[in-house]
Image (cartoon, rainbow, N blue to C red):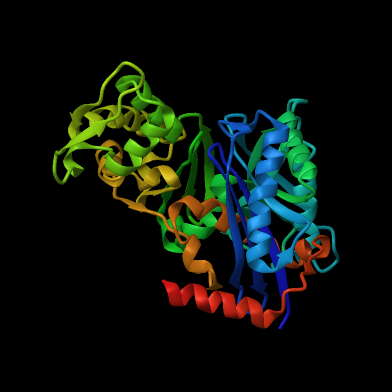
Length: 414
């Protein structure tokens, strides 16, 4: 059985996550060999603000992942986010010129090459070209046209654009960390591949990935991606609101949010008083959890209202029959699904990475790892064998039996 080594890197505003996995090409299952997490200080709202600090965070996360995996990798898939991301829909066609009039992979390549000739601003580059659907000789609704006979092949494409400087800064940070970028993948697309179900994408679903600096949106309908958007309001803004309102340091505000925070009053189980540590001349005080919830709830409601307006303006509000899927570290806030149901008027659930296979998979089955779990899967429709031609992995001297022994000892301690 042919197996490939694949690595993903999620550059977040608050943390950098790295995962190294082994993929079985026959079963399409993954064996999570190692993962690493490091604090991120070099990014702001998805954009690299300090190349040196970002490179150091990448090194730290990859070092932990490599030590756990017993493997070093030189090439990785990197997630991209930020308010610089935009998307357009573009429809194009090619004429089938072969004598048999049978559509082949070469015809699909010609379609994609034609899309790459469209005029875009000089400071933008095409990140993804994702076909929504094909039509052959004006027959619509074709998912895979290869092998079908016809004279005209047409496609409706979802084209994602990114800022050229933003991509260059990511590239510099990764290369300074001693790595190479194989693919840049939009973070909500990566997250969707790890947590969404096929039936949801067919019926219509909105994925909302709440990170530290940005909230990523991806809308699917009829199994195709229809709309993407990145909003610069996320978990850090909630933390900052707590810091400013209660007069505490950022670390204390983050701890209050995680330990006692709720997104809505209706989710509070018991409204107890919590201790707020004083700073300087200010002494300790106590406030009810309901007051903290009001601070958090205002920002979360604002975020969900912005997302709801985005979905409405894009024309997909009535097409999201499967509802809302929340993921990312921000979705771990208690009561988030309750607030989402109230604001969107739709069913909501928390999205957790699925079907990660063996190894250390259970350790990254959490919403905060949704993006990096999707990055090892690559862009939908792309074969990992192409990734493998660029990756150069080197087994460390650690013996396989020693790795197996360490993993067994780890699980025995759980």
